[in-house]
Amino acid sequence: MRRFTPLTAAALLALLGASFSAHAYDADWKRGRLYYRSVCTTCHTAAPVGAISPSTKTKADWTAYLLTDKHAKGKEAVSKYVSKAYRDSIKDSNKTAAKFADAPDKELMEDIKAFLLKGAKDGDAPASCS
Image 1: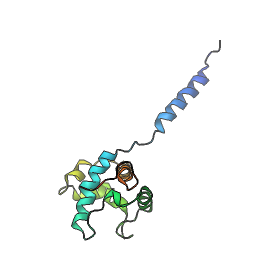
Image 2: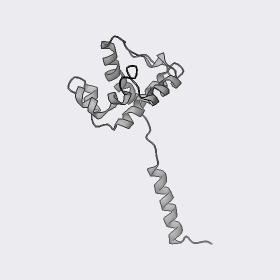
Image 3: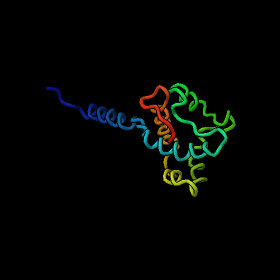
Image 4: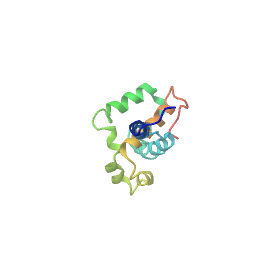
């Protein structure tokens, strides 16, 4: 019967630890829906563009839009509207922005992406903004 050497045990522990630390963030589409509907849609409804439903674009369209990080015809970055600084600037007038004030920008962006892809024209559950 073979015995584990301290070196073998250490290597197994290191591999086990690495697998836990490498775990990616599991996006929450429901949290993304809440933010999108309460922050993004609120602004777009007031703007001449109007509300933009997730089902107006395909998953590929939404993915490309988020990857290019260009909003308002390239004048601004999409990430600006998910940033802590932006949420802080509107938190007095938007309860959802206040609720997510301390959420990491990357996680919130992943949540929004999960909602957009789920609700896309070719997504699992094409969604509207209402």
